[in-house]
Amino acid sequence: MAACHEINEDPKLYQKSNKILLMGNPNVGKSVFFSNLTGIRVVSSNYAGTTVSYTEGTMKLGNETYTLIDVPGTYSLEATSKAEEVAVRFINSNPAAIICVLDATNLERNIKLGLDIQRYNIPVVYALNMVDVAKRRGYDINLRLLARELGAPVIPTIAVKNEGIDKLTEELQKILNSSKTTCGNCASCPGCAKLGMNTWDRAREIAARVRIKTEGKPSFLDRLGNSMLKPWPGIPIALLTIIVSLGVIIGAGKFLQEYILGPLVGDVLVPFFKMIISYIVSEGILHNVLIGEYGIFTIGLEWIIESILPFVFLFYVVFSFLEDSGILPRLSVLFDSIMRKMGVQGGSMITILLGYGCAVPAIIGSRTATTKKERLMISAIVCFAVPCISQTGALISLFAGFSPILLVLMFLLSFAVMMIVSSVLSRIIKGKVDPMIIEIPNLLMPNGKAYAKKLMLRMKNFFLDAEVPMLISIVIAALLKETGLLEKIAVYLEPIVSGWLGLPRSAVIALILGIIRREMAVAPLLEIEGLTALQAFVGGTVALLYLPCLSVFGILSKEFNTKTALAISLATTLNALLVGGLINQLAHLFM
Ligand SMILES: Nc1nc2c(ncn2[C@@H]2O[C@H](COP(=O)(O)OP(=O)(O)OP(=O)(O)O)[C@@H](O)[C@H]2O)c(=O)[nH]1
Ligand SMILES: [Mg+2]
Image (cartoon, rainbow, N blue to C red):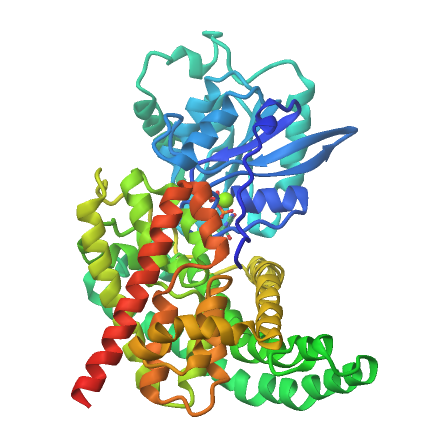
């Protein structure tokens, strides 16, 4: 999903009239509301900081059309991160109204933000979301009292089930049509009467008054959620989660590859396209680009559908479950001390894990980091040592012909590189990393519909954003081969490719195409006959550590600057060639 989290900061949007802002603390359900109200699918996950830039959509209320904006979550209106800066900029941009989403299970800090927003004198309606989880935890909320304190309507909602949305839009319409704003300084409403009081104290006091305890025992999910935070049984559960996740991705992926997609490609699709295209296009370059050795309909289908797709699909099946259940932030707490050794805080683990899907959303996701140093550290770690899932799929396919131990060794090697690179960078990069601040969300059973929609969104993004550049790189491969250019380039790179890395000369194409897409640094190796286990390992190592693809280069330039993107690209390439070459040379020395 190369560019699926594309950010689009259009300054004109801040000036637009008729804006309605969806605001609130992180992880309260704003993006689910946004999808429900606009019909536009955006990613929502059960941890703070899913939306780090905004998304806009249109929404009709009566005869009026409004621009609804999914604003990044914010704990306060004093921006402490890049994502929060966006929220503050929006509230100061003269919106027509705000839908402030409150999490019923975290009343104090949600009411605190609600009170802060109240002071802006903008028409607001509060959605008290996650009332189902509050009920599970054994309490209700006195809505009338809360509405009185906040000086605006409060509507109970369960966003994932679309409950309460109609009532919410009805109230929204009413407040937009009335001239009354939330709270001026009227001295008669409870809010203004207590204006002198510290907002935190007021929020605490209101939360205590509106919460009504209904029944005793916490549910199984709440008890499990709490115990997962302690080393016992948290660490065994975490390890089991990791093993099961990898087992599903690799095991089920190989099954899909071997028994379903492999035969589909090899026995049905490739012969079918070969037959049709041979009939239409006669021998020549076009014929070879389409169905030749590096043809789109031969190798393209094989690499994309057979070697990569099963792993991408299963990665998102597993990862989306981990995201929506609230397991990931719990893993971050348990692994905080390891992450600290790498010079980042535990919470950044989620962002780095995102990189195992694709580096682009991980780099954008680093916007939630509270210091520039941490943002740079996360982005660099992802570029240096985290393979994207397409590349992992290609690596699994490459090592399938040898031993699964190679795959384990490759991942151990990437962790070692990650530790070394991060400890060096944490010394080089100036600045500081804040102590861990991570919000632990409720443990949730993912909502089936929301989960399926997210999976579909991610697969759609994979096909649109990742596969187009991959097809382009296959065309380039075919052209390089057909025009004889590949041979000419290979001569220049031979000392590195064959001399230093010990790879066959034809592996040069992997280094060229790897610039466009990460998995393309591996895929051509699948086609080389007679590759030894050592060559496969060295080739895989170079590919894994090699420079990030073009989309990553683009996002690094955008999020930081071109100098940073160039520095990271150069450093990763040198590192890849150095480590790959050393493995080859040492292996020859000892074997
Ligand atoms: N049980 C339950 N889950 C909900 C409800 N609303 C949202 N969720 C889940 O809560 C999680 C957070 O939802 P998001 O829409 O990503 O939250 P957000 O406010 O956009 O979060 P940020 O983008 O991080 O600020 C997701 O896993 C949703 O599926 C609800 O009413 N009940
Ligand atoms: Mg969101």
